[in-house]
Image 1 (cartoon, protein in one colour):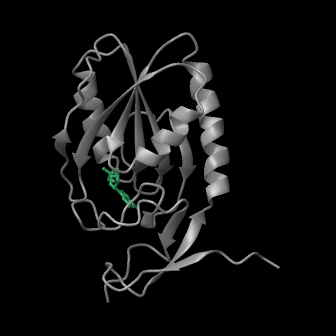
Image 2 (cartoon, rainbow, N blue to C red):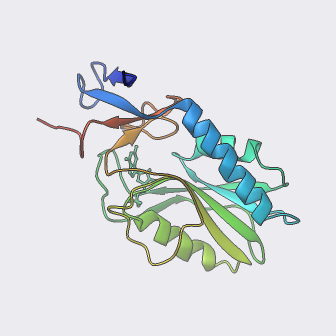
Image 3 (cartoon, helix red, strand yellow):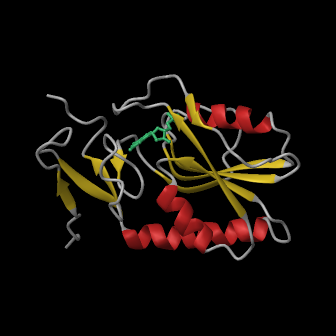
Length: 195
Ligand code: 5GP
């Protein structure tokens, strides 16, 4: 018999209260994949000390787990951008809310994203960081939506490709909430049901 998926009913006071989300990626699956990615990154950057830039807010848990599993040394910095506001669809414009502090000139940079959805944020970040003259820029994302992502350059490391459903947990929010869920949950199909 197929194992039943974990579900989560959104409580009163939350957007889409009463709707049921189902677990898409378990804590175990995430942890296993993060270790694999960390091994790949460690081997690619052997002998180097990259600057790892986390894209706030969504990447904080993924980044923490990823760096804990690296076998190379590294520095960290953060950048904060916004493309979603408080809704669950992209606003179509990206705003820089907090820039990096580190000087990345001549450095190997690894950008850590929570999710690549339209790819708009990714393109914005690539442009911003390449302007600062780094030696290299690579992108790592926990989640990738291949059906809708549009970008004309490769993403170096992808933990999971997923279908086009709005996901929460493991750093990803629903109106700034639910980021602390240890696994990743999805609305049952496509966009959350407003009706
Ligand atoms: P993009 O610019 O690729 O369309 O969107 C990137 C940002 O939108 C992500 O870093 C994330 O903050 C937010 N986002 C996109 N898709 C989802 C989703 O399914 N769930 C959540 N919680 N945030 C998302």
